[in-house]
Length: 411
Image (cartoon, rainbow, N blue to C red; front, top):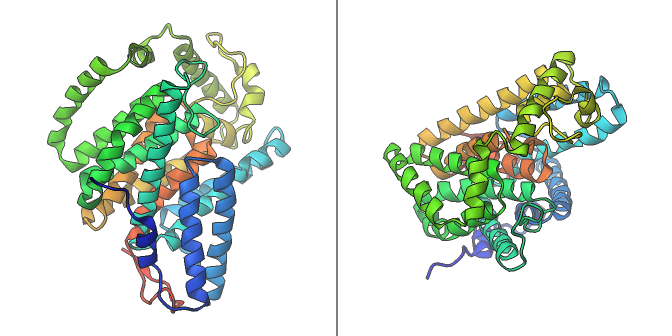
């Protein structure tokens, strides 16, 4: 009977043996990172507290070992996006509201932190924690649906998250990681295959159409990357799903293509409103978190809702609230990420993590057509972790981490 990974034994084997201050700090930093990623699918408050602790450990390591902060190349594009976000704050219709909302750019520090603390084999340990905790939250969501009667659009499974959209977005990212490990990593294949049914079932019972489509797209990309012939399995799996899934779930999926559905109509109306907002504020947008304030003025005649907190579409939301230059920086970030991940996939050094990153990008973009997921803190943090793990896994230090202070290199 397969068992979950012995994470304690694994992590201890990855730590330096020297009994000195640097070694102790390295241990504290790694365990705080593992606690942070474990908390991501469970609690936003706990994850942010643990991220703060991890940041402190990271800074302490940089100081004590006289290191310079390092990050994958795509981090530069993220910094550009953060800078343009601050520019949009300066020209915001309400700077006070926008500056509070733009604090999300601080979460971009997840990239250099993971890149420093999850190097080499540690990246696989971080990935194992994500899959295992994600599976546990999936079981909780299934219990909510089957026992606690979270089985309708008014009350959907949300795990321990505050909203079903956040929960379903996190499940999509975990599905991308588990699916990649099942297809590309023989050592992790059995555990990933065991948890995949729970992850997929939990996502289905959230009745979240965008992420169900996003997860399907992510899995499809993984099949293409592994062996194009696996694509022929997709129609059979889809047919099986239609046969065994409860009518409520299949009806929800079918409604994605029903133009009389109120939520579908409202999504298109929000898109038209967003285009008009961009037309009036092309360079700096209306400011972070200000779309909801101006939406009534731009409301489309075909809209269903009088007000909306955002445009339920990532590219439109970024351009409307931060301007077209910020959208360009965001797109550059994605291009650089995809190029880096594909290069690492081709290198065969860490194919599972690279494939997981590519699948997560596809899941994010597909879900992002229906939801502003890049502005969701929990989703954003886990997404950035998955983008960084392949580069961290490929990092080769030139010295023992418990002794040296010289930077290594990432291949």
